[in-house]
Image 1 (cartoon, helix red, strand yellow):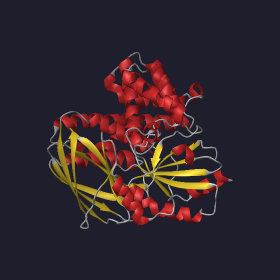
Image 2 (tube, rainbow, N blue to C red):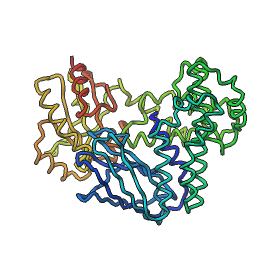
Image 3 (cartoon, rainbow, N blue to C red):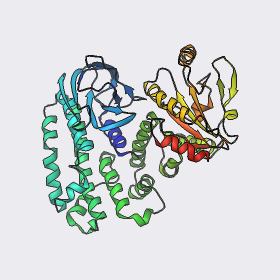
Image 4 (tube, rainbow, N blue to C red):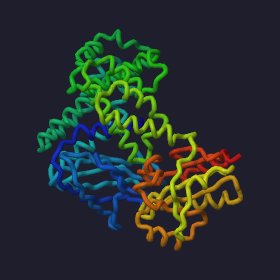
Length: 468
């Protein structure tokens, strides 16, 4: 799984409690390039949202949150997340914070963020924490290995974390501070294991290091309050014993070992919970949870979890893999033309033609930014009769879709899903985030469930190669 997304999801989970009410962020942006977009993911929300920034660089975000919830801000440049320009904040119910984001338009110098307002030390801490964990290499195994020994590694980690602990000491919300302190402690121990994993990979048998093994033996594998320690240890153990898990991917191997390491089902279920949250976030990013690469992870979850919601979810995804997996015949669903006629999706794929499908909506900014690239690709491929390009709208406002298509007169086929609630496209292909692009081969089988965008040069080449 993507390290940035998984880590942010896990961090957010540790900071969220109950009691919903509104929170406000009043922001200002300098160095903003209008061709880029600022987006925000607020932990626990079902989607990533575009931040509406005014001509004066000001923006306001009002959201319902569960106490002390992390918000991740990042720029999209040409449809790609610019990791050098991202930051984190914390929004709390009933509180208003002001944040100023100073962005370097080229991304070379990243961005700087300052906070004022209610308990400003809280979002300041969150951003410091995020920068150290996500943007800095200071806690990486390669950097820590330079310290020489496990004992020296621990001293270096303490030094790097000192500014974060200092900022946290200024936070007024003590409940938040206590939870945050646990999160820092867990990252500290994660850094220790990063050192151990890297050292192991370079040929050192860490099981012969007395200091490290004393640290490991202090972990209670049955204590749900030590979940981060347990997770870090299982990650290290799998990396240190590759021959034991040669047939499994990393995530599935960790769950397999965990089942033998702990005797407490609650520990197993909590670990699976963290994977589920990461999968949900992937889904919000447009990655289908029924993609084939998740299969072995789901099989391990079925084997070890005792939580009914885990079992139900995994069985559903495995069933979808069978019915709507890459390599399987296209799932059928009705489509509507601009003049109200109905036709079946399966009639549009196969028959010796490769089909590139664009799922979009008129209200979707990222979708519309892909349209010029799609138009260019259509023009460049217009003489290739083995390639068909269609756009399928998920607009619930059918009139808005018809008006836009009628006014813009795109040179490729346009269709609408008439009823999202019953459509197999939404249910089986999980079109829960757009834009989403899919490719079907000449036989009408699904070739790519989440294909590259028209703005990526590799897309046209991939279609041409498949059409040969």
